[in-house]
Image (spheres, rainbow, N blue to C red):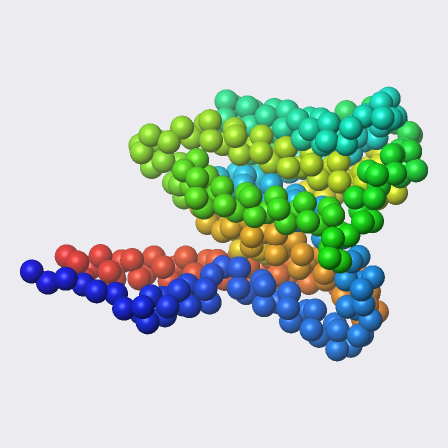
Length: 341
């Protein structure tokens, strides 16, 4: 009887190989390269104030991308996140208008609960009607947007209408990092740990890889998908509350068009659009990359028209890379199975 031993050197070699073949490495490398090139062309790009603005601009998108990645990993998508953000942002302004002395913690709870309820509507429709999420959330996007337009009308809430300590969340820093950015990082880490270490989180990958196989293994597919939509709605609600703190005004048009930017960030971050693979960390890096592109183009005085073209190239590159990697893995698996026969 023979035994197989794994030396520490082989283990380290395997860990290094896994690190450099991780899906997040290409997008992280692109982000570092973008920052380096922009800094060389305009050293003021990384001044303390510019760095703070870059972090603030990326914060909302990071939280939205983390939430969207949860749904996309299950082979679904939520196109209503922009409308949900608009509703929760305007709802936050309304809460402060009616209850100016309300504790801030309660405002966050209300915003996330409101977003979670809207996400639950999406989840229930998707799991009960058995209709693709693309169609369902496209419909709810227009419904939510119509509700917001009717609710807000021409009314707007401005930053001066909110309590000072609420606005300070987007001004105050901790070791140079804005408070709301720290919140986004904590959320990203918490969701990443949940997705990789908790069984219900890993179930979402199984559902995205093969829903029928997941059912055969006893995974409650409908319940897990519903939970994913609720989580996405709750995180979008959190983003809506922080949006009210970050920006000068909220109204009927708040969040318009954000949904496509969020999906783009998730795909660029290495999350497969057909589900089953990718990480929330990659989605967060993708969101930072897309937000940084805007600042980089401004710093280098390049027409912002090119931003959309660059994002399009990044999306196509991410899809092509994902397809090539999938084909290579399938080929390796077939070769391995053939050797075992």
